[in-house]
Length: 336
Image (cartoon, rainbow, N blue to C red; front, side):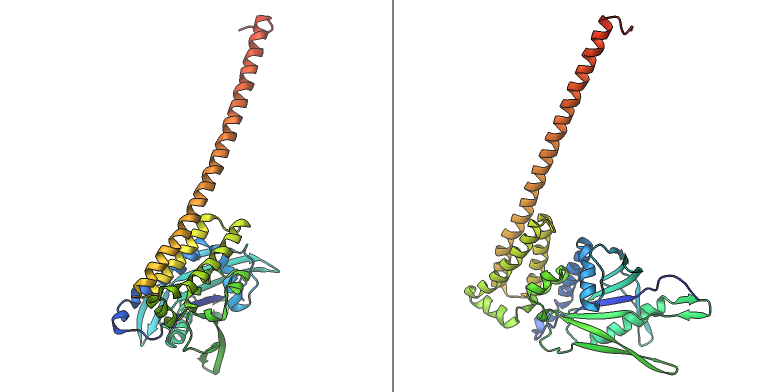
């Protein structure tokens, strides 16, 4: 029998319910999806230490933030649909490894889905089985396939009231099933996101603002104050993480940029809200990034000052040594 680590594959899909969309907006949906995908993918790369926290939340795992996270190439899944093979590029594929009670090495697949349709469940099953059959494990007495663990995160789930669902697999002598947990952004307030360190979900927290509220903000600028309160709250919490040195200014500014990008697409054609977001958030982003630049400049100047002092000390020590050698030469102790 094969010996070694068993690898568990997990795919997490982020799926917002877009709700009612006008016909003219549907053409922009694909590009909108790419923005959300890009934000999530960039988060995975820039805030890698928070990946274990999302996995823990979805599956009840116990990884620490010290777990090793390896980001893998995304072009690995082949979706078989009606006998036709279609190559799909996953949003993120990472391997987590850590020495806990025993060595653990798990593979996790993250998927960002923005159409808000229940067909996501079919796609999850397709991803899982396609990946399983593409990575068959050879054993001494045969072969083994391992079906990925999966989870779905609905960014907006007004019309999707599913807490979890099952994937059933038929085999020659029966049928087995496994649960796929569902996370819904509307179930998480900012307290939960920050307490559980779910920073990978933070840019998508704005999906808790309804289309109706966005329409009201676009018609009446005074309604924009509600969004300002939310953004202020987020910034204060990020500032606290900066004060505790868990984040630096660049990272805080980057997160605010992600939130702005998500809001920019979420607001659609609402020009007044778009302008309000750009004007209001620009100050935060500039402030945090420039504060960090000033901090880095101060640290650099301090390091240069210390270096200059060290060089000056070395120079003085060398001068004293030369003077001492010259005195010995004059005394005839040292002969040139």
